[in-house]
Amino acid sequence: MTTPVDRRDVAAHGAAGGGRVGSGSAGSGAGSAHDLHVALLDWFAANARDLPWRDPAAGAWGVLVSEIMLQQTPVVRVEPRWRDWMARWPTPTDLAAASPADVLRAWDRLGYPRRALRLREAAATIARDHNGRVPTALADLLALPGVGTYTAAAVTAFAYRRRAVVLDTNVRRVLARLIGGQALPPPSLLAVESERALDLLPDGDEDSARWNAALMELGALVCTARSPSCSACPVRTGCAWRRAGSPADAHAAKRRTQAWHGTDRQARGRILAALRAAPGPLTTAELAAVWEPGPQFERALAGLLADGLIAADTAPDGVVRGYLLPLT
Image 1 (cartoon, rainbow, N blue to C red):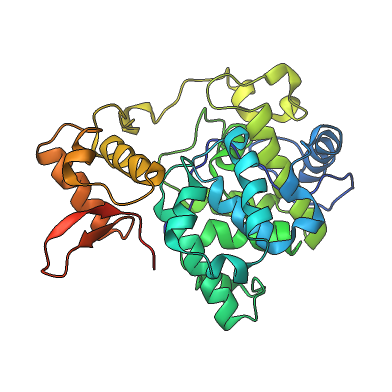
Image 2 (tube, rainbow, N blue to C red; image 1 turned 180 degrees about the vertical axis):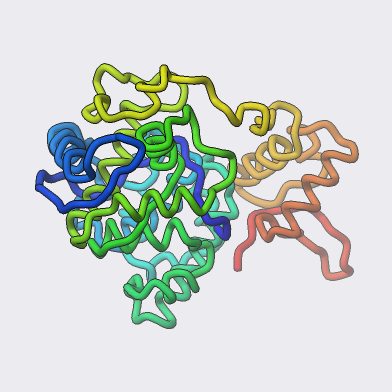
């Protein structure tokens, strides 16, 4: 992941707990930062979901795995896969020793299978350069394959309980409504959003970690994108969007939604699923049974090869006999 903000259907991290935190300026008449902190953290202490990566025993590796899995994938799909993954590869060193084929089969249909291979590469880096332990320094986290600004901040906050601004889609939406008075944040992250989040972040390490988790949980359970449950919101009295009359999304015209049916992504997914299920290589003709032959099929096949998600089964004379998951 190289973009500044991961986009996930559901955000779910951090340990629950009560507490009172410091001061600050919430802005836009949303009430004092202290009042917001108290209301939201009390709500979080009573309503946080019991998710396995929130258990301190999951450690930094468990948090990192969950963060990569949760990118654009809902918790209900991630949780059983995370449990299986951690049982099979409980440490980065374990995953680093796995074959790409085994990793891709275990990833199954979590989406964007390149993330699985990047996670394996990150595990190899951790095993080689960090004694098998997920690093604590932000620069070292950012140097891991597949780890960008958001994921590094999330590991810092939720695994190591240190102060960091954690901005995912849910947090951006909550703060856009609560402080900015907007239905949804702009399509791309703006500097003002980071400044707003930093301004509200409690000073203490543990307090800031719980605050980040509480914002995420509110966005996942209450302040959802399509049907927010404003009556159940613990900070509704300070919400600038509600006071403005809950205006429509000002950025709606700029948002693009990509269809799935008939796309190259669907073709790639079908081909990869067939190879995951196959006991050995499949010929081009066998793969053509899962997607209509033609330019799109050829493009999907070439893209999977270029991304290292599949490999060609080549005869000694150089003739390609079929395709399989990469073994090395």
